[in-house]
Amino acid sequence: MSKEFIAMGYDPLFKKMYGDADDSRKAAFIVSEFLDIPYEDIKDNIFIKGNDINNRNKNDKKRAVDVLIHIVLSTGGEYINLEANLFNYSQRLIDRNVGYLTHVFSNQLNKADDYDLLEPVIQI
Image (cartoon, rainbow, N blue to C red):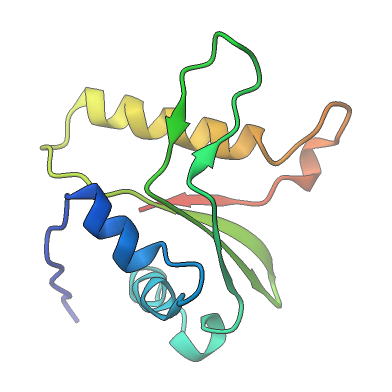
């Protein structure tokens, strides 16, 4: 079945729709659609995280993802980073999103933590 999605690239609107920590139903729905996981399995197990990614040192570029979600299912937890983009796919967009993913991964661990503690991160 082919799914059509409306392009939404205006960050404040996107963050308001999907990043509301008090009402995660819309975020649960879009994650359900993209990952083909039943909505009923996600709706009570989804947590909207703050969108500012902590910097580890003064030279790090400030990173603010659009909507960072943590879902915890019986199979384990994973992070979903939803990004709104109106740009055509380009190397610049790929590099930017790789930067977001890198920061989401690195913020999961503290010094001396083992890498097997990392939870998967999915970028949408």
